[in-house]
Length: 110
Image (cartoon, rainbow, N blue to C red):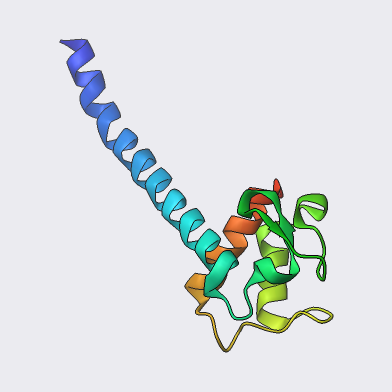
């Protein structure tokens, strides 16, 4: 009986964790799509990132610099060096997903 009560208490927390994980996977997938082809110009044209299979040589190699999501989002919003700003062409949700993807795929902090 105690085990059943314990499971009843545990199940809602588990559901929240699974939902958050599914959302994170969706955000990662959206970010990867944007990296490869959704942003104009596509990030993969200039940046190398192993997870994406990209070998761009204009911008920094993302697997080496391992940027966190905040750093990527700043660069997307403001531009950096020869990199253009994407503030006018991507929504905040898209910028967030792309920053999430690059940081996770490169091994940077979330």
